[in-house]
Amino acid sequence: MPIPKMSDLDLKGKRVLIREDFNVPLKNGEVTSDLRIRAALPTIKQALKAGARIMLASHLGRPTEGVFDETYSLAPVARELSKLLKMEVPLIQNWIDGFNMGDAQIVLLENVRFNHGETDNNVELSKKMAALCDVFIMDAFATSHRAESSTCGIIKYAKEAATGPLMMSELEALSKIMDKPAHPVVAIVGGSKVSTKLALLDSLVKKVDALIIGGGIANTFLAAEGYTVGKSLYEPDLIDEAERLTIEAKQRKAEIPLPVDVIVAERFAEDAESYVRLVSQIDDNEKIFDVGPDTIKNFISIIKKAKTILWNGPIGAFEIEEFSKGTQAIAKAIADSKAFKVAGGGDTLAAIEKYHINDKIDYISTGGGAFLTVLEGKKLPVIAAFEERMIKNEKVA
Image (tube, rainbow, N blue to C red; front, side, top):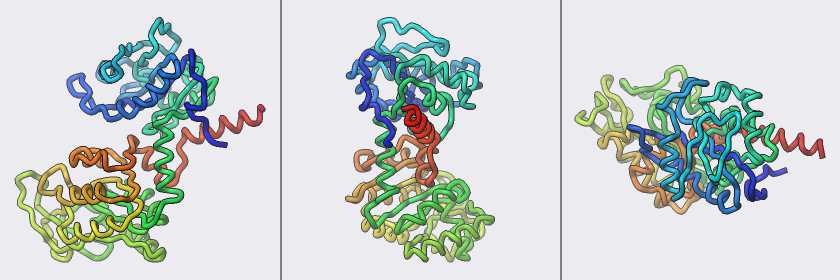
């Protein structure tokens, strides 16, 4: 049985609580990136058009639960929403025990994490949230890997519950990547440590035709091949895992193409002197900060053949211009590709914005941990909660 969608429900005149992810960066009390707010706008506008009375809920940061802290107030988000929707979106304090919406068609509830028990998925808190609404809509894919009161617990107790358009579009895009992708499938995975991406690499190596790795992850794989990586970040205790993944890829006739040349420097700084080195010629005092020109050519040739591309993580320290050429070249190659392309992860989003290729990616995920959870082949707690609800409803029927 498919999970109910917001579009399946009659929302007219109903109090609809929509869980969004407005965990946005702030500076001096102002939103510095409204990407996540804009991503939620289609859901909000659809609910407004349907005649719903909307309560928006989100967390922001990691405040001490049960304590109001202005640093983590959603007031800047309320101002940004009012601007984007061209209508006032009042911010409601102390809402958990009920409140009067008055004539407002839409309100924003203050940070859900100001309520004690939110991150523990407290049953009583979940029931209180459910009592506020006629319909609960889970639209915050980026928080769907967390079993919390406002993401999971409320699903069990709400009168009606469904997924929102943003949540469904994320799941559908990832399903297209994970379930029946068009081959060749190429995944680009960057990051500083194998340990943080091991489950992802383990999952992808079973599905892709080529797994391009970068950053500190690649350094560990190079060390597994017997290369000296100087003072570069790598994980010697995970060399065996790198070897295992390489063997598994070969057995599937897939490839994990390693850098053949790299950009090195003795320190991570704008004014550091950098050099191109073959991977067999790295000095003991040097650190790898990017891939070299021959490696870039090789990676681009692999990407050009792809029909499905997954991108998670830059392949170099692209924050500094001298070490950004690899990531920039990969970004351009992905943008130019005719393949179906999905990208996600905080650093990946930063690279996409830096190189202005937002409109060249078929789907850009707003999720970080949730994005990785799905790609690792694990079930999201939110999906499990919906499935449990549906099983219970079937038994009652």
